[in-house]
View 1 (cartoon, rainbow, N blue to C red):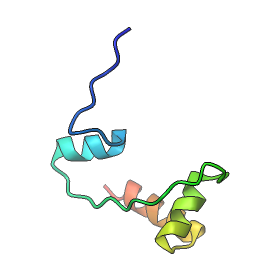
View 2 (cartoon, rainbow, N blue to C red; view 1 turned 30 degrees about the vertical axis):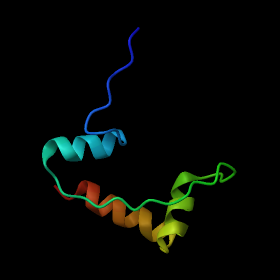
View 3 (tube, rainbow, N blue to C red; view 1 turned 120 degrees about the vertical axis):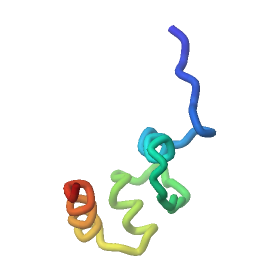
View 4 (tube, helix red, strand yellow; view 1 turned 180 degrees about the vertical axis):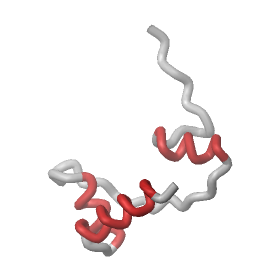
Length: 65
């Protein structure tokens, strides 16, 4: 089976979808530690926010449509 071509220079499925929809967003990149047990907690630490607060903020944002 052929691999799918990456669109818009790659990215995650979410960033590709946002780009295709014309939605503006900001990528907050950080160096991933392969030994980290949780992507979410690691990302929250890198952004300097509480993992709990980050979850609540995501829930409000993702359900406010």
